[in-house]
Image (tube, rainbow, N blue to C red; front, side, top):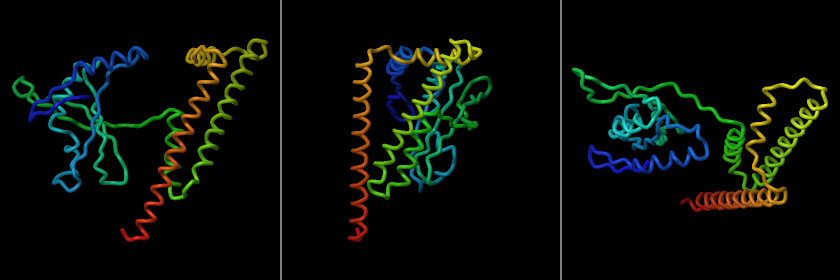
Length: 240
């Protein structure tokens, strides 16, 4: 969210926010504003840095008020990504605000933490598992080349099996061997609606281009990982 801070004043890019929301709604009309997020990167040695209240910046209330007007329910959620690395992890916390009213006049906002759970769909889970696996094997130079190819092969085989299962189910329903399930039919219909209608030769070209891009990114990441490993060993041997 582009903004400029001048002391206690905050200038928010309202036009940018509305343009981005309009672009999101063009691809998915169900998108809506539910809150905003920020990072907390206070120095670990700063006094009181371990206090959760320091995760909230002084200007958070002003930005939070803006999103209160943009969100449908008027009660946005404020996510804070703790990047201070005080522990061997990056934590994410969620807050809601309650106005502090004195004699009928709102004076400030009081942020209180709420429970937060992280959920990921199957593609995201696969990506996260591969990232964690690559991190665990980063000491083994070049060991991830075969792992990436194997992961891609396993994903393609799983996709092929799922398509074969769906095809067999549809054929069985058409032939009257299986009683149709309306829920399964809706899921198959929604899945087919997400597939773009392109000619097979164009789809093959797009698929191979995307595959080449993926392999190139994997190759470059492996080269970078190798260079870092070599540099660490040289620094260790030279006592740098």
